[in-house]
Amino acid sequence: MRLLYGELLKIRTAPRTSLGLVLGLFLLVGLGSGATAYDADSTPFGRELALADVIGVLSIAPVFTLILGILVVTWEYRHGTITQTFLAIPRRERVIGAKDAVSFLAGAALTAAALVLALIVASFWISLDFERGHWELAGRMVFAAALWGVLGAGLGALVQSQVGAIVTSFVWFLVAEPLLGATIDALTDTRIPDYFPGNVLDRLQNTSSAVEVGSGAITTGPDYAFGLWAAAFVAIAYAALFAVLGLVSALKRDVP
Image (cartoon, rainbow, N blue to C red):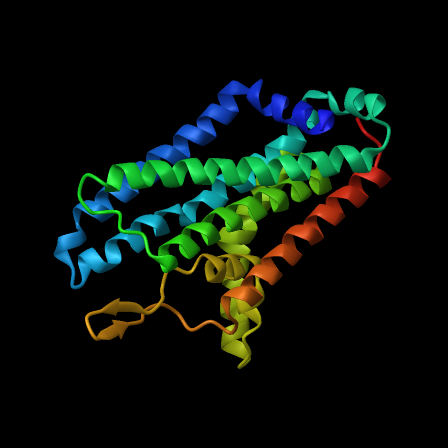
């Protein structure tokens, strides 16, 4: 517990970067939820779908929790304090495990706070009548963002460079994965790209589902190769994989 508390304290004592991530996410979520709720009456079934759309604004949260997870590890490599940390706690697996746990908890807390903000802003235009589907959607959003915090921590421990880890993640998710997925789709008739990390995250966060409107229902969104439970397990596997790779890197490589 003392190790976890120490890692949480490190986040609190890095105010500029932490505050920048929090304010950036809150600003985007606040603007997005406000615009979504305000325009609820301008589309068919707008009021029925508005609350799910407001919760769906949180789909941007994993970007911020991924960066936060990277920073939780690479702060120390960048400033050279990782040496003192490993000297104080020679069992590196405990240090990396604590950073992974803190990344998960911080990612979940940050996303949950952003959800509260989104609902407060949206409440000025729509009623917040939560049903089971809304609770499940909110839970998936928080869980997915928390997992991507762990993935970020693992990537940071693996690369051990703050800029390198952030650039690598953005290049993969914004450039490499879409291009590779498009190439595979063009050359083969398989659903392999659906199992790429970004697509798995999209499936886990999927806001498209059957929405009851009167006696009927409407269903929108892409056709995924697997269900929500499978997406959750695959996302957990990705987070665990990078956590293990980061641990191996920390154990095998010398500190600066």
